[in-house]
Length: 161
Image (tube, one colour):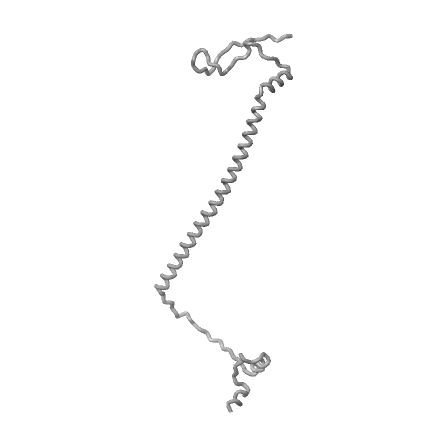
């Protein structure tokens, strides 16, 4: 009798172990109804749990402290990298300036060469100065003190016509 009772139409049967075709046949026979139930939770009051509140506060504080430590470490790390790049840039700039300085000193030495200056002067038609024409500016004066300004006579040469 119990075996016959399982095959009665409208009886609820477990569908988990059945094949898909058998499951469709059983699902088509068994009606399923869903009813909406309204739940009103407006009168419920949440009870504050001080222990849970303290745990959340401690957890939040520890996470904030860990975050700050990580940020300080990252800031120091990236600052060190930036300063390293700046130092390398300044070293390269210093090397470039030292090379330019060396080139300028070589150019100055070649321009101050007395043989070159004498050759250029002769090509422009200049002559060697006669004795007494050259007055050295860096020679000590007769007064013994430093001379700020000195008045000298001016020779006026009339224009030839």
